[in-house]
Image (cartoon, rainbow, N blue to C red; front, side, top):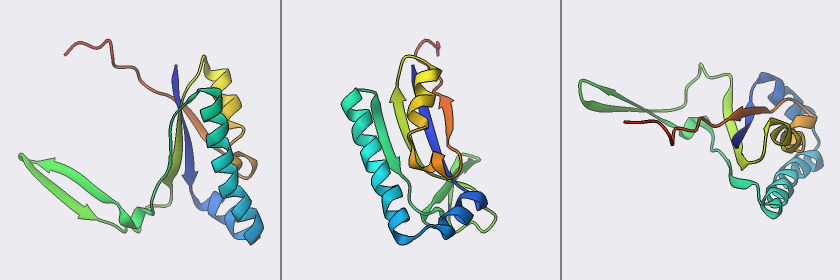
Length: 123
């Protein structure tokens, strides 16, 4: 079963970030690289990426058949997705065990969410 481990940036995580030393910040980043490698070696990693700053985002909508785009930054955003791990594991317990290894879990929270399997849906 596939699960996504979501790493959020929010006021709580940013407050923690501000208290970290340069070495702790470096260790956090290296911890993500090590976790990615551990997941790869265990055969559970589907994908893992950090995401760019929300100020670089483009929002897309369609109205009356026309595509409308708008660029960031979006001042109202207090929380955004900073990165993710997509894993394929046996069950939620295993997904939680991997999520607990995410460096951010030691400072704030990470979210584990099942991926909706739409392969059996008829269209």
